[in-house]
Image: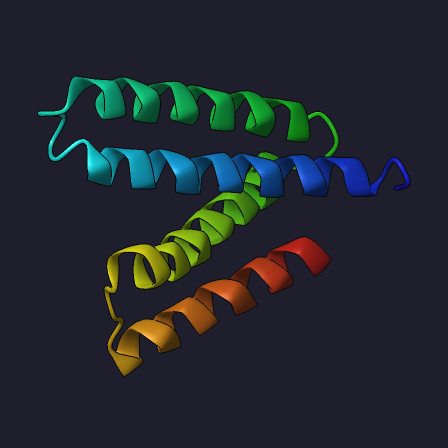
Length: 108
C-alpha cells in the first residue's frame, strides 16, 4: 500500500470501529448492561484515535465523511445480518446518496 492510501485506510478502519461501537451500544440496551456500554465507549475512542491519525494525511472533512459513511453502511448491513432489521427503500436511497457524497468529497 502506498503512503497516499494510508490516510484513507485509517479512516475506513475508524469507521469499522464505529460500527463495532454502534453494535456494542445496541447490545448494552441503553447502557443497562454495563460491560457492553463500556465496550462501546472504548470502541468510539479507538475509532477517533484512527480518525486523528488519518487527518495527518487528508482533510478532516474527507476523513470524517469516510468514517461516517463506513459507519452508516456497516451499521445498516450489520443490523440486517445480526438483528434482522430491515431498511425501507428510501433508506437504501439515503445510503446511496451518502456513498455518492463521500466519493465526490474524496475526488474533489
